[in-house]
Image (cartoon, rainbow, N blue to C red; front, top):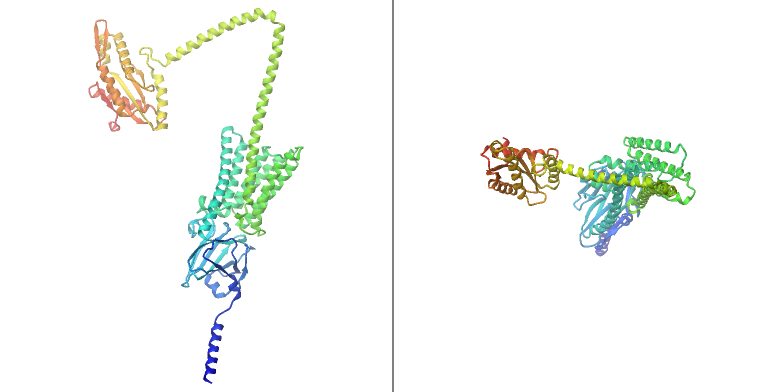
Length: 628
């Protein structure tokens, strides 16, 4: 009897133990199990609920009814309430697994992740493009949530999502290494295509800079707006351009959609793309452009959802109008209109594809389907091709006009030759006379040209010393100052003056003074070895030497050699010998102000004055402290 009672007690305990275990087949089904070799899950299953609850603790206490979503993106349309997602992950391996949960929609406004920790704590992470980039757990253009799953443990993750428009939530799970491989390949392809677009933008802007054709500037604006729109949609603008400018992240899509569509209108008005020749088409295009700019401005004051709908509706309507005026173009062959129609079709597909996500008609990872990028790339390539073709056509037309004028001139010349042949006999004397006159005129012109050369030489040469004069020095100084500033090289200027020259004139006469000046000039020229070093007569007995790419030490050595050679120089006048000395002032510097080149001569002259004050027959270097 005792054994029976013990058996009953044992069965009762086992029953109570099983009764205490809540069997929830739905929870078991919602759990995503991972193994040690896990790499990637493109479409994560999860549960979701729509509620007014805004706090995680209130949500856990309310025990809401979760709806299971097995795969694909969650598309709920426009939802005013809070949308909560529940992701249950179980690590069946013995090792810890690092994971990245990716919300594959860069444009979601607010995402708050609550990660249940083993110690019953809750780790909270904030994401979304309405927050600064620095607030994200991972500073990346994608919405990434880092996770750490311990071995043989289960982790529950709750996501609270709030968005201004249609709610499109695709989830994927990655191993960090696998995600890095995927993102590296994606960024490589994207970078090549984005770089190709930037190259087209630079090409169009360069063509505008050289040719001043306005349609190249319009093409630059169109390609730039398309490039910025793609950068915005793919999240790179948020990461690199305006990480702390949430207003631009929120309204950038509507603004760039409108601008990229409106930028086509100036190209249409240039008649580069085929359009109808009706007289009111150009006026309608101007009104459309003005209205689009006004709508772009108004969109910045509208709610985000309404601004996006207005922007896409206006852009699609504009493209439809482009279709109509292209179909009504006067081109006879349909094949001439097909490329432009294909461009508008690509633009329409891209706009409708993006608009479908905003309306909730489409769902999934927007960026994993390169519809927008391919269509935009085709539009940019064809527009660049059309602009280049238009420029080539204009050049060929210009060349043909020149050829026609040349052919007309040749025909007139041939007719004139025929007339001349008819009257050749009568005109021989006249032609002979003309030839004689022409020859005389050529001889006169040649003589005049030689005289002009001589005058030009005399204009820049000092007649006494045969060195360059002050006028040529001023031009040369300006050139060397600019070169010094551009190449950051030292420019040296030496001012030289014969000591007590007035005494030479007074004692020996002005003729002796002139010979002394010539001897001094020859002495200076003998010491100039480099082609670019040159001496100029600055005035009277004063000379200036220009030494490009020469520092103060080299210039001082040269000035000292000239001074020493001058001291040993003797000028013989009849039975008299004249010896003289010279003083020099030196200034060396890298030019800073190209508008005031006379600073070099002013400072060198000050140094020369200092040499005179210190007793003459010496070389002084200008120092800034001399001005104090």
